[in-house]
Image 1: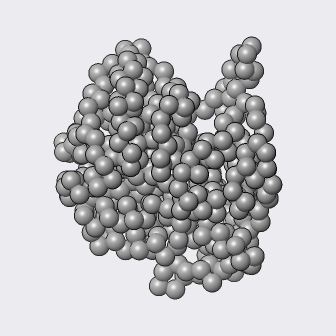
Image 2: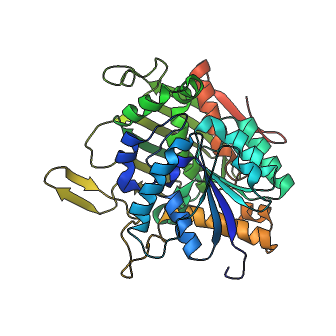
Image 3: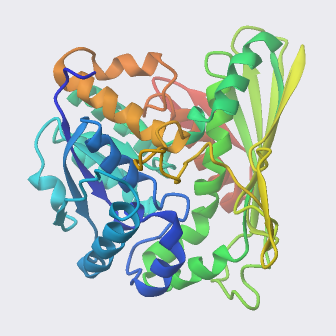
Length: 425
């Protein structure tokens, strides 16, 4: 890849560039007007792109956000917590507003980490201008929008990927390979939660904008559930298809003291999904996916997550939250860490040393694909064949999530089928 031209990248959504060690200070000191600060994204995108520039893959960087008042504090934090920690990091970047995409050129790239309801419009706008896009999960909230993005990416010949970084987790990718030898699919269950302290952050920004508040309270499960629904869809790609979704929700914690979120806020959502084999008329499977914002405090992990897969010849269990690495401190107790996502400690030479983390790899794969397409070495559609989370390869994730939302709202099962494109019934 050394002979490929460097690529210019716009970071869309200013919350995503800040390193993890300063998350709490940022939440306390920066305005959150119209933007959601997501802990799992902070310190990954910006740090990765600065390092990819050091390695010769990225050229100019830009940063865009709704509220320009954040930029001075962000620059100060980057200088201290990235420039002051890692050697040879060029932290220069251009600051722009939400119209920044208009200043980009065909073949540039944008990475979108804005609130869920904005993904479709920003992604489509960029694609139509020949700009490669990496958008955070969930890609969109409506299946029709996802289908439109698939068509647009194909029409304009750009790489459009969804930042489903768990596909690059070494345990998950190895489990997918092993599942190939377990015969027909039978059962999958997944649990993902974040502690109820997240509701404090949620409440802080939700009251800023009524439209975002309403959208978020009706779709908070999109963000958490999308992780393992995508993993299941990825494992079952070309093996089985989803046909029906039934959803159920638990409520009462988020809407009570001390959180007092708006009345329609759900605590825990479970989707029950029917799957049918694409190769055997005898075999059907079941998927159960649960996501919660109201898990206990002081559990030792920020996000408890695990899943179980059963095929006709064996099963697989993955505990993503406990990676055999825990630290106990007198004041705070035991904490389990996941260095496979992002490693922040410098190398022996003082440089950033997290290139093997699957949060980093997810972004690098996108950058490499976009550069290759720009050079004419590959076509954007080639990456649909590689098991990467392209917009085409993630359509069933959106189909299940959208069907689940309808099932909750209308209290009925929702069918999924394919005509010329995937649709809901």
